[in-house]
Figure 1 (cartoon, rainbow, N blue to C red):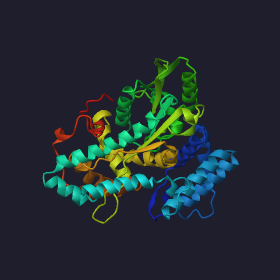
Figure 2 (cartoon, rainbow, N blue to C red):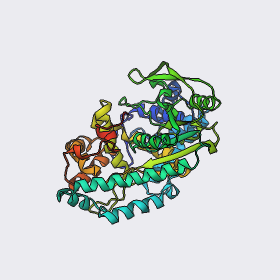
Figure 3 (cartoon, rainbow, N blue to C red):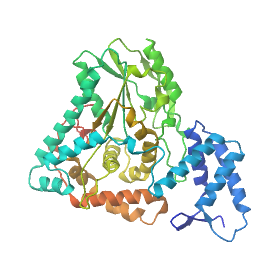
Figure 4 (cartoon, rainbow, N blue to C red):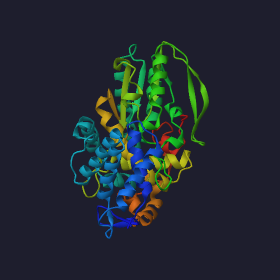
Length: 443
């Protein structure tokens, strides 16, 4: 009876041993382990215990399998991995019953920034999707663009002012935030303000420090989980940053994303007196990345799409859904990655964000809100046709339940707003150009 398993919602689905191996390996990676063979051995132990169970005439349950995974990990002496697996499992149980997460609590919500966003939306009559739709349909889309761009510009000015107050002491600027929040454009614009003061942002591309792809966990459908900070060689990054601040020259590795391997060198790097090292990374605030650098030498900026727009049911649209649409556009435009591939992979993105990125928000020196109220009608024009297909394809697939729920939510947003086709009205220096293309900046 190892052919089927009963999920928590009562559905009976095919049993897949690779899911056990994948879950164990993910837990191991989170504590620094990468031995797939060890994960396979744990899986073999679990399968062996399942085959000896007394109630073999009944189907397995998810809880039963997870209990045995914990047991096998502990018996093999993988205490740290067992703890990570238990915590992750407990996190999901809290989420299912709507209780507070261990790592994502109300303390991480930037209430003052939300108040600013809501106040702006009220002042400009952009509180609801209907108001955005009315503005678009009444021929006032350009005014929506102007107001949105002015809001983002003011966000940038406040962030830059805080940074400029600490010039002379700061040697490193970290910009962090979840996927597709607009980090790259924000960095460029902050850099312009620094250059006016005689300082330069010197980027170190931490993507070149990725571990080889075969060291990342891969699920049963072949999708790699490379969204965690442990996908990077954190010790190497930290060591090179320390050497740079000591005035030494470092050799930056080169990561070939086509082969998924580190191959040789990207060149040497050394910083000057008025250079500020830039770390533009999802996981820039993850402690291990810059552990050797004193906090007073770092300026930490966090960015997020802090929308305060409500749908027809008076629910706020989710920030992550806005960023999902941005990432779809970027993946299509620049990475030859289809919208379906993006939404299928998104649950890995969100899991990593909630565990490794969002909890670091409170450590930031400044928070920038990158939501643009005019972007949704453009998103609908570009992406609207895909979502009915997603809903149809994912509806009866238990492994795509997350993608199905997200597709449904986005489809409901698109039902309330019209599509806007003319992208020429979007300024060429707009943050949105980072995702739709046509920017005056080089990314």
